[in-house]
Length: 450
Image (tube, rainbow, N blue to C red; front, side):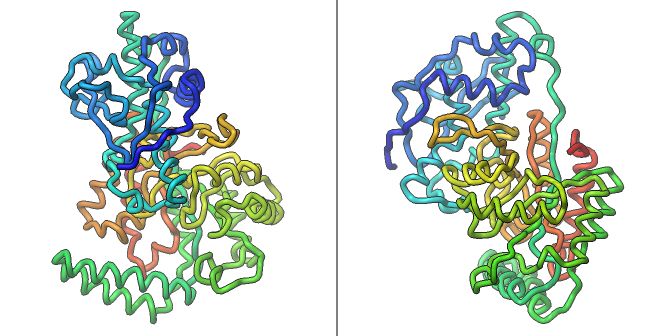
C-alpha cells in the first residue's frame, strides 16, 4: 500500500461542507447537528491507498440506519487499538471527515494525482474496497447523525429536523446513435466478441452462441435504430420526465472523432423535430460533450452554445461522453462553460454508488479549496452494466435494478439512471430491461419531477 499525505481542507471547512451538502437531512434545527460531540481528527489524518473500509458498530437505537447494524468508514479513521466490535467506537469517529472523504471521492482524487484520471473504469483502482460502491454510506451517516442528535434531545428525528424528502431517481438518456453507423458496427461487434469469449471461460456456452449470432447481425444487419417514438410513449404512460443529452460538434471529423463520437448531425431536420417534441412532452435537453471535451471548458462552452442556438433556450445540464472524467478538471471545465448540473459521476464497468452517496450537491473544488458553484448528481445504473459488463439474465437484471432503486428509497436518495435509446433495437435486444426499469421507476418516489 502506498501512503500519501492529503492536502485536505481544515476541520472547520470539512464540517461546514458536510453540513451544507447534506442539509436536506436537517432542513430545520441544523445547529443540533453542528453541536454533536464529534471527534475531529483532521489535523492528524493521513490517507492510505488503496481505499480500505472498516465497520463501525452502531448503538441499538441507530442500528436500523446501517447495514446489518454497521456503517463503513475509511480505515484510517479507526483509532489505534480499536476493534470493529467496540461498542463505543461510534463515539470515536470523525464523522465529518468520513462524510467528506467518501462524498468527495478523496482517495480516488489522490489516486488520480499519482496515476492520472481513471475516467470511469473501476478496474483501474487496484485492490480497492468495492464495498464503498454497494451502498449510499454518506446518506446513511446523515441518518445516523439525525438519530444521534434526536436522542440527545429525547425527540424523534422528524420532529427535530423536519420530514425527510422522498427519494428522487431521474431517468436520463445519452443519445449516442440515431442510426447504425460503420463506427458503431465496429465498436459494438468487438465488445460483443470479447463477451462471447468471456462467456466460454465462464462456462456459459449457450450465451456465447447467442452473442455470436448477435455479432453477425450487428455487422451485417440494417435495422432502423430510431426508437424515440417508443421511448417517449413508454415514459409518457407513467408520467416520467427524462433528460435527453445530445451531442453537438460541428468540427470536421477526424478518424478519432469518427470512431469515438456520435455520428449524427444535430442540424438534421428530423432531429430538430425530435428536439421540439422532447421539449413539448416536458422533458429536458442537455449537452453530451464530445470525447475530447472532458477537461476543455472552451470546447464544452462552444458545443453548449451551438445547441442553445438551435433550441433558442438555455442548456444547463450535461453528462460527458464515455463518462470521461477527472475529479480535478471536469467539473471546473463545465463550471467555466456555465453549466449547472452534471451527472457523469459513475463507473463505466459496474453499477453502484461511486462516491458512496445518493445526493445532488456542490462538489469540492480541490484547486480553489471551496465548493463548485455547479452541482453534481451521481448516476447509479446504465444499460450496459446489466448487458455488456455483467451479462445478467432476466432474474439477475431485475434483482440488480430493484436493489439500487431500493437503496435510494431507503436513504431518501437522489440519483439518476441512464438508458441509451438505440439499445431498444433488436441488434442490442435491451428493450425488455428498459421496460422493467420504467416499471420500477413508476412505483418509486419522486421520479416524475424535473
